[in-house]
Length: 245
Image (tube, rainbow, N blue to C red; front, top):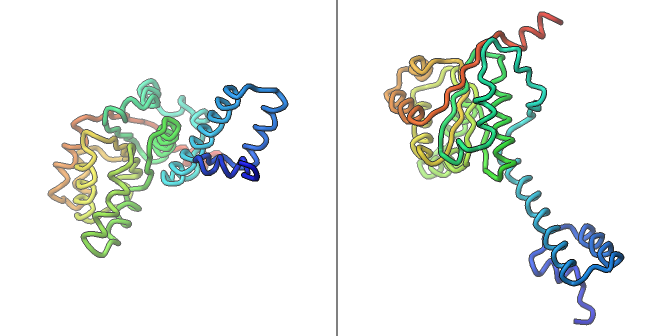
């Protein structure tokens, strides 16, 4: 074994922690006169933490959550009505494990996006895969695909994550094909993976959003079969800021 670099051996064994981190930890263990068993345990824990951090960074990048306002800065007293307990129960991620959907419904500017993004943060912390997008971005992405195989591949971006967050349904009108695409996504996820939708529309108004597409009714039926609805009533935070300014 003479001449073989210890850190090269660790890398060959599958250790992914940075060389400098491994070296610093080994030097500390030598100073502390750790036993071989203690050294093995510490180095294994170090590697597991490193892998978990790398995995979280990868899933966070794929989640495309954008800039997230911390939940501890959310003013729960501002909306006239919001079921805080029901929302905080969602943070346990039990609804994701059960394949339950969530609807965040309320007028513009009451914090629906922030609440959706923080569900994404909680899901990432729980080791789950997440995708956050606006409905308009999702539909535009799918409609750009130039062939059926390309569309099938791209749909996996929205059907595969444990938690899909679709923001801003109802803010921009969509063509009927958008409802068909959303129906395909929901059908693939139905009963197995959770979808969170934020909207300012009642279910009966979804048809107006998609040009009375025939797939709207089955879409709503699939989505609401097992769904938690959180209604938020209040005035826009942004308008309040503008008035104060």
